[in-house]
Each structure stands twice: as structure tokens, then as C-alpha cells.
Length: 274
Image (cartoon, rainbow, N blue to C red; front, side, top):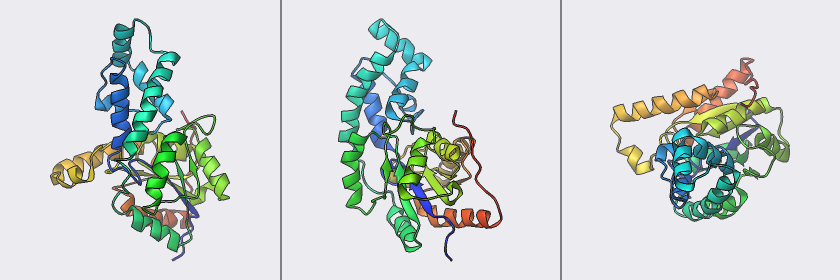
């Protein structure tokens, strides 16, 4: 059967590469530590999916972190603080992607499935262009070469604004938005898709919310795995996901379900970015 979906747009870390979205999490924790402020893994993961400067702002202005920053530096967490953190964070994240660039199991097969059906492949990311300059070649040798990659900082606003999605669709010449599916592991990435008028598919178990490497996930007891999936699915659905899957390996079934909904006359709708 020929899919009526014309294109899929992928997020990167936690969706196609870097099972558990480990690279950015560690870089955020270390960047704040180098400025004398301890943040937790939960602090670092909370705003994941946003452009990295926006992410740093969200972490740094959270009440507990803001208080710790004020105690350590004698001033509020401000734009100068964001600049200083970002200057440390970006090189750390560039270095980290070297060790966290492997395709998520099932990604290669999902990409081949799309190619066999003429479904175009694009991508957006909360990573900056310098980070992607390091990561993209590592993914390319594994077979992930999207037609377009739109990075945080390329446009006036990042996720959950729709501009990166619209830019990706324009670059590929794909429309209407109802024929495009976004796959993403974070609420800001889901919000980006909904604001653009596209279908949004959340990825529950390989991404930032679950936060586990492949071997860690494989050793979970069934009950713990189910609880992890339930928590991730709830967060992604609250962000507006039309559908939630375990991993990119489930892409063919997700596209089939969306095709059926299109055939029945359903459209994804468009929501305003917060």
C-alpha cells in the first residue's frame, strides 16, 4: 500500500541516535558544575528538546537552581550567566556526541521502510549547528542522512515554535502539513509539530523522559518498563502527541495508523505554541 504521508521529520538525540539522550544531559550537568552550581539529572532533562540557550535559561531560572546561583555568584541568573554556561556547554556536548552517536535499534530499518515507499526524510533538532557538524557525519556513515537538518539557532525561534518544522517542509517542498509526521521524544518537539499543523508521534522508551541506555532498558522488569512507558506516554500526550510508540522501530505501524486516520477524514489540527 502506498502511504499518503509524504514526509517524516525526525528529532535526533533520543529519537534516531543516542538511546536515552545521554549526551546533552551530561553536558548540562558538567557546565553548571564548572560554574560552582550543582544541578540534578532531573534538572538537566526537564526542558530537553528546547534550543540549548532556552534550555539553559529554563534550568537556571528554576527556583532551586536560581537560589544556588545567587548564593554562589552574588547575583541573579541572567543573560550573562546564560552566555557563560553556553560557552562551556557547547564544547562539552560536541565532545559527548562522539560517544553517543549510535543509531537506535530499528532506526536503519525504519529509514529503509520510508525510502522504499518514497516517504521523504527531514529533521529538526534542539542541537546547535556546531554540535550537528560533529554528529551528522557520524550518523551518515550509519545510514541516517536526512534531506534537511534544521538546528536550534538557525531561525528566530526554536521549539516549541513551529518555525523549524515549516523551514524543513519548505526546504523539501512538502505540503500540506497534514501529510507530514514528526517523530520526537520530548514535549517541546511534540509542541513544535502541533504548532506547525503536522502529525506528532511521541517516542517513549528510547528518549529523554525514560533516559536509559539500551542495555539498561533491556534489563528492566516488565512492571518497571510498563511504568516508565506510562509516564513518558502521559507527558508526550499532554504535549499533544497524536500517537505514542516505544521507539523508532515502530515507525511503520505508526505511519499506517496515521494513514488510516487520514483516510477516515481526520486531520492533525494546529495548536498555538506556548
